[in-house]
Length: 391
Image (cartoon, rainbow, N blue to C red; front, side, top):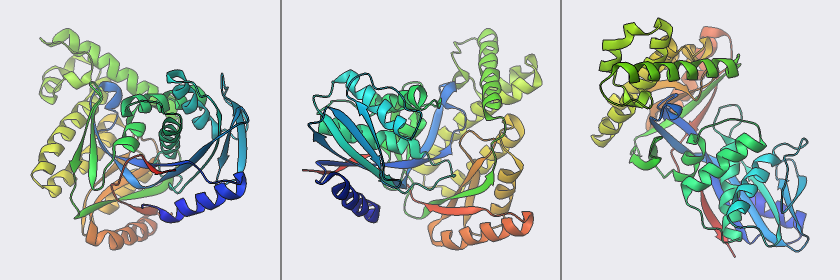
């Protein structure tokens, strides 16, 4: 089992706290975004992966008429009612669970309370979506315990609503879908128009590094909103000048952008070029992976970051410095910012047999160049959310 030590620790803590063994234990991983940046709300394509770090969720019924949830690392307990549970202002980590349970109860109401505990090892500060891991392991366990029938897309939407309405964090479906649909050695390719999901084989010869230079997010909300509005404005413009329907930038090619970009404000045109190019990179990347061309796929990551840096302007000095460092290190095939940008982390595609040396070299070279630390973790595309034990 992946993360066996975490699983064993959770079982011990659950029995000690509740005086009984759980009936169901679920698992859900964090995720990385590999290619396809700011394409989800433009109805485009994304490559992501579930990772080899995640969260376990243990649960059993009780006769007390309330739900109990314990964070296994903090050993703090929060209770909430079976019906009409509201977000809490203290121990706010519980809101990811409360919101997910509320979404499941809308499908099939609970007939008893539950006692639950979760514990995970998703590295913090890397943008690996520990919140989605918690939502999806909650969803899997509660659905199993109360025999609630819901497919992965439904569970992903429930997690998204929990994050938005209970935790106050607007997000797309990428994190939840990636956590649910991952597979060993596979990337998850998602079409955010149809929500069609497929897995694409990476093979055993490569893995990923996540590099966190501790770049502070600056004005993220305003920056995100301005980028999204520029994309929407550009889509409306292209709908007025192209001879085919344009509902979102996913419907525009780079050739069409090049032919008509001068009709747009230059900044808006540049903003639009990024998701348009990203969609084409994801589709080309799928072809390259099918051919086993990992070098070509890695180059797309470098191209993606350059587009982020120059066209979408959602990178920052720290992330640019990390990517520059990776270009000098043997075994590294590609690198780009991962996630929304304006801070965060860099994802690096690296040959598996060179990963340890590359990780060390990134940290050392970044320190030598900037005088600052860069934390590096090795990541393997891994299994998605599942039930790992049921009595």
